[in-house]
Amino acid sequence: MNALAEASGLAGFEAHHLPCPLACEGIFEIQGEFALHHGGRLSPVRVAWRMAGPAEAPVVCALGGISANRRVCLTEHPRQSWWSEVAGAGRPLDTGRYRILSFDYLGGSGETTGPQPGAAFPSISTYDQAQILLRLLDHLGVKSLRAIAGGSYGGMVALAFGERYPERVGRLIVLCATDRPHPLGTAWRCVQRDIVRLGIESGRAREALALARALAMSTYRTGEEFRARFEGLPVWEDGRVRLPVERYLSARGSDYAARHCPEAFLCLSESIDLHRVEAARICVPTAAVAVREDLLVPLADVRGMVARLHSARLHEISSIYGHDAFLKETQQLHGVFAAALDSH
Image (tube, rainbow, N blue to C red; front, top):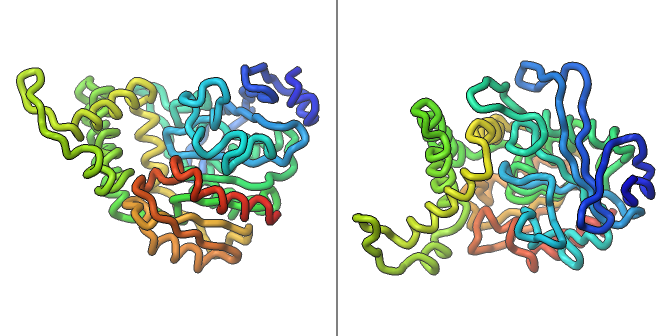
C-alpha cells in the first residue's frame, strides 16, 4: 500500500505509487445508478482521483477549469500539471502543509466516466460534481476538508458543494467564479459549442474543437496582454497572410484538441452555462477572488454574489492575464490563500 494511504488510514481502496513523494491515485467505482441533477442516470460511474502531500496534513481539494484534471501539481513534471504556478512546495497552496486532493470531472476527458465519440451523454451539473466529491471523501475516509480551492468551473463546483454539504468543508476559496454565469460569457460558449457540433456533424470534430478553443483563448486574457505580445507584422506563409496572434491561437487550439474529447468539451462547457446555485444558502466561510480585467466573470457579478453569501470576504486583484489570473498570479494569491487557510 502507498505510504500516504497507510498513514492516513485510507485502507481498502485501490491505489498505486507515483513518482511524487507521498502521492497516490486510484479509480473507484460508484455502484448502482447515479442520479443526475438535470435528469438522467449513469451506471456505473468511475471516478479517477489523486492525493499528494504530508500524511498527517489537512486535506484541501483543488479544482480547476473544464480542461483541468486530477494532476494539480507534479514535482518532477510541472508542465504536465495544471496549477503548478499556484500549488506546490512554498507556493500559495503549499504541498508541504496540506494534502491536495483532486479528481477528473464527470463528463470530462479524463479517466472519470465521460462521453464517448458519437454517443449520447446526459447534461452534467456542478451539483453532480459536488456529489462525486462527496462520494470520494466517503470512499477515502476523509471526514472533512480544510478547504476547497476552485478556479473558474472549479469555483462553481466549490459553491455547489458548500451549499449542499456544508458540514464537510471548512472554507471555500472561489477564484474567477460566481453563483451563475454572465450572459456574455454564455454567448461566447454557445458559439464555441456550435462550432464543435458542426465539426462533429461534418466529420472534422478535432479541427472544430481546435477552432473553438482558439476562440475561447481570446476571452481568457486581456487586450493589454494581446497588444504587448502580438503587435508584430504579418508574414506570408503557405500562400496566405498569417498574423502573430493567429499563430498563437492556432497553436493553443491544436494542442487542446490533441488532448481533449470534443464531446467532453460540449458536456462541460454546457455545464458552466447550466450552473445555478443559491448563494444565500451557503453558510461556509468563503474567500472570493475577482479579477478586475476578467471578461468572463465581471467584477460586479462577484461583488453581487459576495453580498448574497452569509460569510464572505472579497479580494479584488488586477492582472494582465484576465480570467486566467487564477492560474498565473502566484504572488497576488499568496495572501488570499494564507488568510483563508490559516483562519480555520
